[in-house]
Length: 176
Ligand code: SF4
Image (cartoon, rainbow, N blue to C red; front, top):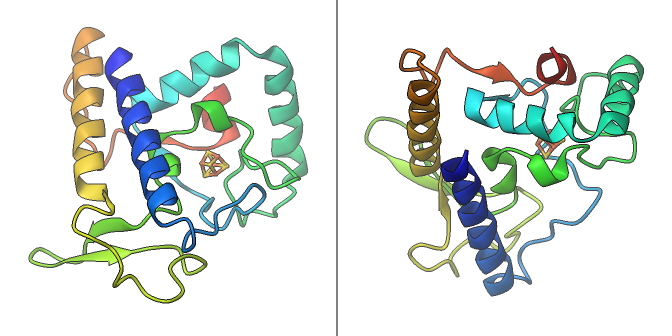
């Protein structure tokens, strides 16, 4: 869905801006997968985009099935992370994965927000951040939920519940 791809592009552009501006503080590199936690989930529009990506690459589907059987990270990482520590669906990874490593604005409770980042980044603290030098996770979740709602309407489905109507970010769920 075009709106979802636009959102992916915006998050990528924001990550690029932040990593350029704070290049000395962001240590993300290929092979680091601390953010790739198990049991993440995504909206249906995100899951369907990954499924379409997999449809175009039968060889990748075969290797994902092998990966799920081998479970090289023993359940400690996302099942889409290969044995070399690389994302098997990197080009189609969901928006939450595209924000990994950047400073993020998160809701701590009903009244408070806070800035968080991977402990490997911003080791000297985050005082150098200027207003807006973060990805607002609440806004990102809201935009993703709205796009997922629109996607459901286009398919003649009910409005999805963003908390319940989610798909596991696992090989099994994406190949089912
Ligand atoms: S989809 Fe890829 S980037 Fe996202 S958590 Fe899984 S392995 Fe990591």
